[in-house]
Amino acid sequence: MILESDLLVIGGGLAGLVAGTIATESGASTILLRKGQSATAFSSGAIDIIGYLPDAAESISDPLEGLTAIAGLYPLHPYGVVGYGDDVAPEEVVDAIIGRVRDTVVWLKNHLQGTIASVMGDFNTNIYPITILGTTKPTCLVQETMNPGDVNKHEESVLLFAGITGYPDFNPSAAAKTYLEDRMALGQPPHKIGHCMTQLMPFRKCFNISSIEIARHLDHAGSIETLAKQLEPHVKQIGATHVAIPPVLGFRHALKNKRELEKSIGAEVFELLGFPPSIPGLRLQRALEEVYTKAGGKMLVGHEATSYTKTGQKIKTVVARSPRREISIDTKAVVLATGKYIGGGIAGDEKGLRETVFDIMTVTADYHSAKDILPSKATNRLEISPMGQQLQWCGLSIDPQFRPIREDGLEWADNVFAAGAVLAGYNYSVEKSGLGVALTSGYSAAKSAIKCIKGGGEN
Ligand SMILES: Cc1cc2nc3c(=O)[nH]c(=O)nc-3n(C[C@H](O)[C@H](O)[C@H](O)COP(=O)(O)OP(=O)(O)OC[C@H]3O[C@@H](n4cnc5c(N)ncnc54)[C@H](O)[C@@H]3O)c2cc1C
Image (cartoon, rainbow, N blue to C red; front, side):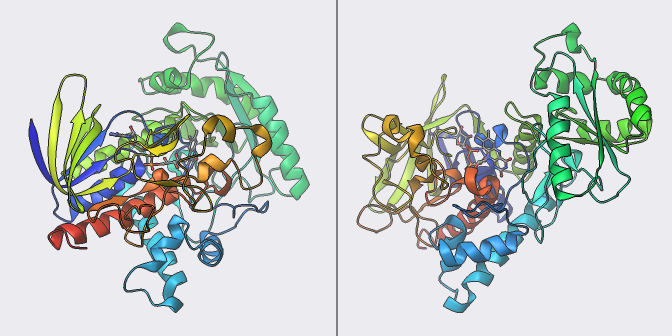
């Protein structure tokens, strides 16, 4: 089978879906390939822009401050690259970066509005949602179901951590203790924190219950009333104004469930940030796919880009395989958004680190070739520094249009643009910048690809 599109996006995580939506909305016909699950679906579902500078222990209170520091200290960081577009004067670099990231945050908030992953938060300030461990982390946007409201603002706030019997991933007593110690150290409310257990027995299971089973159960009519009945006496007993529950409030009806629960028990309810499998991460993935397909984009799930034809400096055709068929896609431009080790865009073995679709050169944190980096040696525990695991820094090096570059410093192709975790030059786990980089680079790569398509391939 042969298909044609103006733009081919390879990768269906946040970077690829944002790039695909931008291109489709600009009038370009777009096909997106997603071979499997993405890191986006494994994420906590909170959108980090920048929470820390690499090597720094203090968190950043607002993305503006963080981006300004990145522009000065890490000009080759994917955020930094945004400042080197053709029409940006040197004195405008910081403003260009801040302007682009702000635009993308507003774009994402608007597009997720009314979906199962609608978000709240503001580009001008980081927020500190609570995790299932009782710790906090700086992030920019959280899903509305995770909004802790004013729990930290009022002296009289009382917070109740509620667990679910048989769900092993959340220990409300340990989380309450950690969070209380943290608040006491800061001398800030809430000063009274309690914990309790509820019994849900989704699908009659009473032990080893997964977050997916609970979320599915809570989407069924009647189950929120059962949860409310169980919570009510605990809320009354300690006079809780807020109830923190693990991130399992439902797939399709999480926000409705939150509101129903709040009405029944008379306290604000919010989801904590959790680990994979993450229901909010899955909600974000589904919501982004819905936004992309509603805009008119075509998506081929379970299709892996496996080979290509290149004429001169241009990719002409990419071949995608699924277990049942092989498709050739003729395209004018490609956005490569295949992620890193989880998505599968970068892989490593005894021959070194390689980009998996086009075999483009990968680089290290110092922008040296990463082809000789052996994961078996680089995962030595002793090598972990405040800069984080070195493998997380590796990926593709790009030009200001987000085109990957090769060993001689020239673009690998004129019509291939890269975005998201496949890029080098940042470490999301130390910076808390994962979905933010995917968002800004997906948006930027798509803008460059559209220019390339409209210019007949010239960029
Ligand atoms: C456990 C965990 C928790 C995290 N929590 C957060 C968080 O709370 N906040 C935050 O901001 N960030 C978080 N991150 C980081 C964030 O999830 C990633 O940085 C981000 O999702 C990367 O998005 P991406 O689109 O670049 O890649 P991915 O989301 O990994 O998507 C890559 C896509 O490419 C597809 N693909 C790969 N190769 C091919 C091929 N050959 N053909 C077709 N398709 C292909 C994959 O199937 C996948 O769909 C977390 C990451 C992890 C692992």
